[in-house]
Image (cartoon, rainbow, N blue to C red; front, side):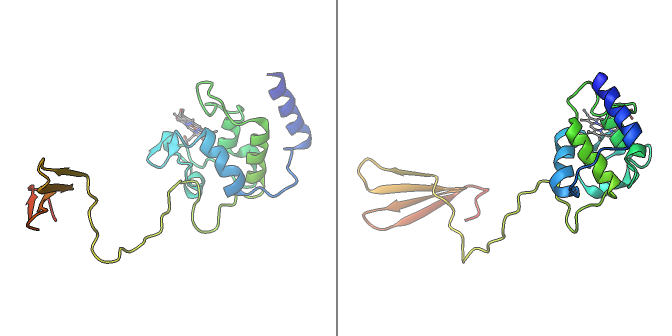
Length: 182
Ligand code: HEC
């Protein structure tokens, strides 16, 4: 309580404390949002209509309008709620919220113009895998092999199909189920 009061006083007197570095949305801001906010404010489940898993979502605001005023942290609702100065306090229900240092980062970012990343949005975590074309036909993996007691027949199972090989005559027989596309 005392701490909040002192901080408020400090801000009232000297304005928001600032970092000496330029705040980077991707590096500095997104991890804070990810940690404390995105669990309830994502595009597929946006409490209060506010999604914070993309810069664009955050900038377009929620059910009550804009969530932040770029350039002015003290009139940005998302900042005021996150710092306990505006109801409902975010995150709600006494959940752990951003630390004082993290609040300074958020404030600085807003003060510096709330710039987003160039190009693609980084918060959404997608595993990017390169598309590697397969060379020729793909062989399905063998999932089981069994042999008859006398060693004559061998059964090889793959998805949806079993191949019977006669190891003596070289004869081969394929059994597929209805799902099998071999
Ligand atoms: C446990 C879920 C939860 C978390 C975590 C959470 N919020 Fe919220 N938030 C809500 C709910 C629910 C509402 C709607 C409250 C209402 O309308 O009374 C809301 C509403 C808001 C709104 C108002 C949106 C509008 O336009 O009405 C803002 C701004 C906001 N939250 C910011 C944040 C920030 C910033 C964080 C992270 C520091 C955060 N929230 C974390 C649940 C959460």
